[in-house]
Picture 1 (spheres, rainbow, N blue to C red):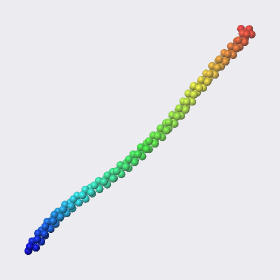
Picture 2 (cartoon, helix red, strand yellow; picture 1 turned 180 degrees about the horizontal axis):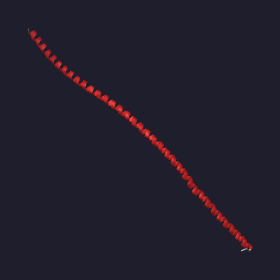
Picture 3 (spheres, helix red, strand yellow; picture 1 turned 180 degrees about the vertical axis):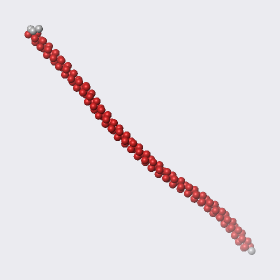
Picture 4 (cartoon, rainbow, N blue to C red; picture 1 turned 60 degrees about the vertical axis):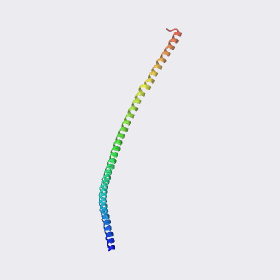
Length: 134
């Protein structure tokens, strides 16, 4: 009988330990379920973030392409304007050269012809004066 009491006490102790372990198991199951739920929410959020990032990258690429195209158009327009301005500058350069260099050379020719005429006239007057014709 003493053995039965010892065995009964051991069985009782084992039952208590089993009960405690079952409580731990239930708590663990509950925590695993909560973690699983949290993980599922996290995974869904990560998928959403990934999809949003894909959309952002796509939009960013489109914006860069549009910006690049606009810059190319503006660059072409600026090149055309520069070419027009260069043509106008060449015309103005030719006109300025015509008005300055050519005009100055013509004035120089006139002045030298006047001086030459005056010198020749003076020589002729001197010669005529020397001959006696007044």
